[in-house]
Image (cartoon, rainbow, N blue to C red; front, side):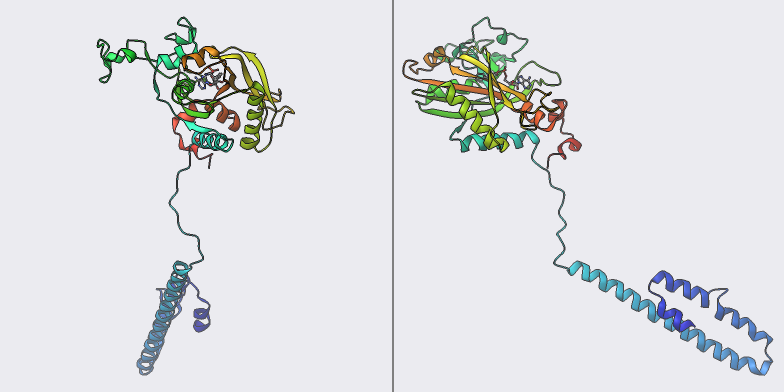
Length: 349
Ligand code: FA5
């Protein structure tokens, strides 16, 4: 019976149970030894010797089985480690921030459409951020309530009182954190001759703070200048962009609007990329989502940049990258974008 039970044992725990059943305090073999006292004295010696032999044999068999089981377990373990077909153990890796994902996709899209990338500084001269863009001195956008001003005399590199560099003498109020990417239009037109076809993507700043307005946000700016450029080119380019970016050509709609640096100016909407224009929750059943501003470059901007408006025409557009990312993923509050909460970020593999 013991041999049969032993052959069935397939774990160290079961083996231990079997050991207790035979050799434990109340085990079968242990109890047999108690029977010895009932035997006539001349038989005791023989019985004792036989009992010892049986116990030794059982102990040896148990030990042999234990060694076998351990060996088996080790072999399984080794087999697992040596299995070259198993996938490697990778440490968890981070992913690109949803905004970075949109920024990359945007710049790739416009580069495919023939635009090159241009950059400008975050701390910008108000001449480029406002004056050369035809923004009047009394325009509300220049208000302290909308614009972050830099105090140059606190800046080691800028001396408020020196006359050394008359052209760029910086007085209080002349340096700002750029409020849009449009100053990159000016910087580009001052240094390049038409044809010009650029996009500028970057961080912008305004004294804003609510669910859809953040003090720091991101814009993309497009600029195309050449002979004979029209607003029809703008619409076609924006439609081509939707096809590249959203994978299908969406409708583009202009609504008349005003920006000092364009004339005529418009806000532009695109057909909702989720429902294709049928109306869904994400476009509030309108079939369109608002994207940004655009228009034909104002002659005054060309003149400020030394480009002859009698010879050249051009268009520009600009829109918020954060808003676009928000509407794409139905993010309820802009704050989520900048908090760095891993539970939020992990949703954008
Ligand atoms: C402009 O900034 C113009 N420079 C756009 C432009 C460029 C018009 C070229 C014509 C030609 P506006 O102030 O509307 O326009 O801002 C553009 C977009 O920036 C808005 O549609 C919005 O998506 C985004 N935006 C503005 N303020 C914030 C903010 N505080 N937080 C997040 N996004 C913002």
